[in-house]
Length: 295
Length: 252
Image (cartoon, rainbow over all chains, first blue to last red):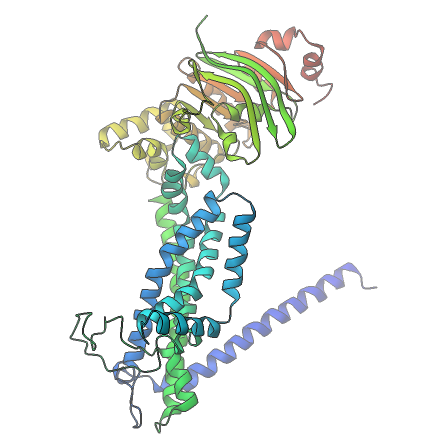
């Protein structure tokens, strides 16, 4: 039998070890991706269109597509998720209906993204006849994102103490006023953090997009901002390969001579973008909390 | 003797099957402080929260009997809880300022009600904070976060926040139990200053506090109102044996 002091030391030591191992694995992965990818990066790489057979293609279109798709997906999923979360946390009674909704959300969030992608293909692309398009992709991403976002917003609402709700109601605010004028402002920083983190996941998603937003990236004319023109960046009905899909595609069937370099470079861009999202989430969350709570 | 502003008749409250209030008859005159005392779980807080319908928020609560505020039944189907809570304000055990500036906290009710006149809002902020006896301490940082204040200051800002919507009745649910003695005594002073203009009903665990500030005291036990009388009588010459036992510390 170890004495409690030694026991404590051993426990702390192994916990440090495990934590260290996790960090080490992450560092190794990041290091490998960045070391092999960053040297490929250049302004040309980030802005030029991809080339199918020749050397020297970039990922400009894919990068743009990723952001555009992300924004569209967020525009669709955020209001729904916000409404669902407010309903579930603030209004819904604890009964079998809400339990069912919650279970459904949980199951939806654990669906493999490739299944979501195939569903999106059959439903949006084929049945609704949207074709391989940004819109199909954005809907598929909504399915993928909605449960996670709803959960995260609900968690944000949960962090606001009940006494705040009572305080609002006791002042003669209606329930809706209490939610919109007291609870939501107080929850904004943490909601924003959740949104940005889920943006990171959406940004890196490939499987759900392969069969919905498509695997081709037609050249875009960045001077044409009429969303009805096929070469316009804003057109939501054009097929749009994203960065993550691009990486998958190059690695499975890329035939350009510099496929390896492009794949490494794209991975680095993807990882850097997601890191940026994470840091932005922290920074903005903190900033906003300070501002909102002492404005 | 002033007019009765709030009356409760045969008030029963059930949490599911459990009867938490067993037929309370208790009336309040306009103005002055009434303290509700009694051992933990005796129903005094539950009773207080029926008076502005805060118990509505708890699922599975059934309430029977009548509560009338100026002759209007608070539990009538047509009763508007939002309006009721504007006229019957509440301060809680834990200070619960909103995570905004002191200024915004105080005017929140008014601003949401649509008041935009800056001068009027400024005036209300000053008046309410003065009434709550916290103006001098916060007047130089009205636009800083209310969360940065001490617990006692937060609680007085919460009182000011209630005063700003000019209620007639103020309910306080153990307003000092989370505070240190100095802050508690500041809250007591605040309440004493307010007793001429408002009807104040406060739940307290602190018998000395009841004896110091309350005009009337009501003693609750096991969901029943045992006795209500002038505070002096309750403490010096209670009619009921149970009251005497509780006051003298034999239980509770």
